[in-house]
Image (tube, rainbow, N blue to C red; front, side, top):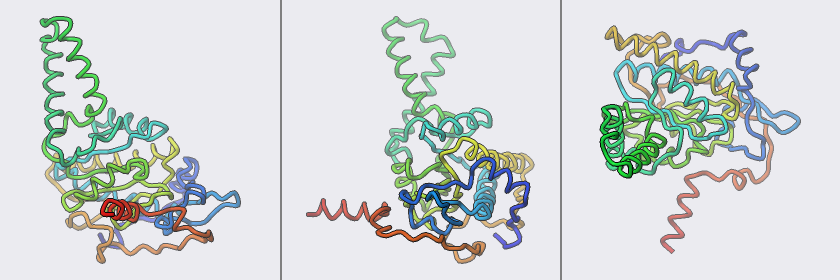
Length: 300
């Protein structure tokens, strides 16, 4: 991605971000040092403020990746199960724009376990039985049993029933809450593009993702604003796919998605956060260290 591909944040967009509360991060008590590069400063009450210029830049980078994947007819799955705000917004956009999604719970092994694929196929079979009227021709006991199965499968896997083939990319909203999904996605990151929409309490290093969009993940308005921007890239990718074109409105090259640690990616000037806290490493341990400690305990 060239340096001229990223547009600067204008006053109109900045005002829109401010009104939606995109800039509000987590309190310093929940601070993660790994997200300090996206923090502009801290209020007197101890609330971290996200640099909206970086949010806008990262949003464009993630959008360019998503648009290219959609234009190539790749499967992108949005994951967000936090019912307080995330799942509500994600379910709304998924229904409206036909997005593959997981909003109920992340089933372990969704990316690697073939049983999950079989359950998705079983869900399609049950819905076919319901639509054809077959369930009305069987006994009430059998119908009740199958309807309970159908209800449970719709809740857990209903957002994936239209997916064909493998998952090529994941957009994880709030990786801290979606810990299992994040760990599973990163273990398979060689074949999977992973984009994170993260708050300032994210314990994952930004370099492990293909793109990170720093924003307030606790606000409905903030998440809606980010999702609206991503949906625009998705629709542009679908249009490119229909016309068999791959020209991106924010990028003039045809290179694939880049890892966040790729030296050829855009150079973004980021200011370190003016934060002074003691024992920050103890307050916000990394997931990697937690996994290493668990392995050492198991060996012992």
